[in-house]
Image 1 (cartoon, helix red, strand yellow):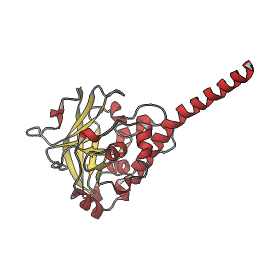
Image 2 (cartoon, rainbow, N blue to C red; image 1 turned 45 degrees about the horizontal axis):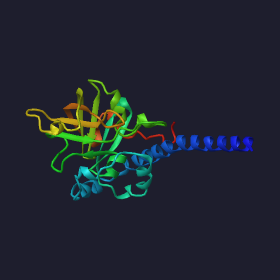
Image 3 (cartoon, rainbow, N blue to C red; image 1 turned 30 degrees about the horizontal axis):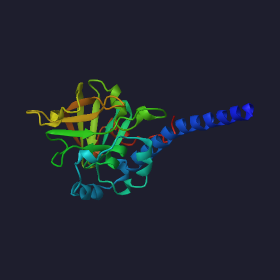
Length: 237
């Protein structure tokens, strides 16, 4: 009997171990799959124009933390998400869709705009996304790569009409209550990227760059083109 109980406990332990490993892989698979689905090269300019006019929510109280169960529940919903552009940081191999508004779906599958009034290439264009922690390809997803951002790196954003190049010149952390990081900065046109510093969301990592150039989408630099063509390996571990 003792041997049977021991075998049973061993089997349960193996099952639990497999589940603990498999669930973050499943979560990251769905995130990467949807990020690929909404790449800028797969979205038409007409859809982007329509999405810019959509009424969206900026209710932060409705945004939940990123976990496996929430991502799996949302896995069938992103088909109609309001894609209005894309952001790439080529040196970090980061390429995300930009969605209008703040919601669980937007935050789980790309970068969300912080205000209904912001415009690319103007003022303080602020974007926020989750930092994915854990196993599998977590460090490559959403805004996780910003942990490795360095001053001088280039950030490109586009609405498929123009491509805006920003160079990173500020990297710092703030408390969650410090919302003035999205305010307009007199005399500067910047992009401000925001994500959590740790799994408990005790702080916010801020990566900011100044606008240095604007290109036509069809004649963008090769580096930007390669960045916007990047696809994520959905089964990478």
